[in-house]
Image 1 (cartoon, helix red, strand yellow):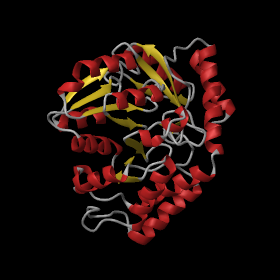
Image 2: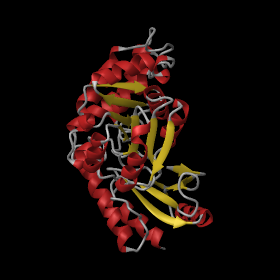
Image 3: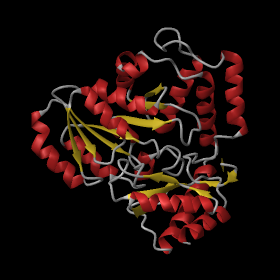
Amino acid sequence: MTIDGKQLVNFGWCDYLGLSDHPEVMAAARSAIDAFGCCISASRMISGSLDMHRQLETELADFFGFENSLTFVSGHAANVSTIATLVNKGDLVIHDEFVHNSAIVGARLSGAEIKPFKHNDLESLVRLLLQNRDSFQNVLIVIEGLCSTEGDCVDLSGLIEIKEKFGCWLMIDDAHGVGVLGESGRGVAEYAGVDPRKIDIFMGTLSKSLASCGGFIAGNADLIELLKYSAPGFVYSVGLPPAVTAAALASLRILKREPERVHRLHDNSKLFFRDCRARGFDTGTSIGLGMVPVIVGSVKNTGKLLERMQEQGFNPSPIIYPGVRFNASRLRFFISSEHSVDELQSCAEALSR
């Protein structure tokens, strides 16, 4: 990438599988513009639905192991609209304390009561359920699959046992897990060896591994039918633009036929993660796949470190309060299947200097 005329190695994008400039993806986007123009200027419910939209939703559901899926023009809107549609006053949303802002906004708009539990702490979750489950009609548990700030994963098998015992719904935002977790990139369920159908509501993004923009919700057919006619972010929004839809569909098909991209991503991630740990960097609870955080502490020192990394030719992604706790500011290194071994090793050396 180029910033102010200086070339840097880019560790600041979530282009995990290197598909954002893949010739096949770009060709698909161009062809869609030629066929349909730049914009679908109508709601999918009125006259804005293309065969391409339905094809993408069918293939997303099939790849991730669900009956059906629904695409939204924004991943943030997918979470907000879905949560606000499924729960309301008299219900309870229990969420991981580090869950994405979109889940919090959706819960607030729903009118349901909201309670956080400690990050990935299933005992904390159980205590909340023992104290509160009987007081609410519906309870929705919301977590991230691959956590966007910590780079770690919950014990999914244990979480599913808990949600089934207490009669709750489970929603997983796996935006960073899509294309990253599991041998074939099918996300947190594949990584944990769990039947994906035990997840009631699965959210993924099109803007990271799938090199496009927007988000999707996957689940059983009844869930998707309900959202299709009730979720404001779908009913009252235009459909995904043609180029965006075609790019996501092309990316998904490349992911399916080239699992070696996922394997390269895993190898690169492990190499960089090992280098960081060997040099004594604080990587928190990260599992070292896709995104590796290096925790610095203060906002000021994180800013200084970012400047020095850029001076040495590398561009990581800073995250500070309120994205993380006040004294837990960090640099995040998003690893791609296309980073070279030299780039990864040189970045770790620069960070050490």
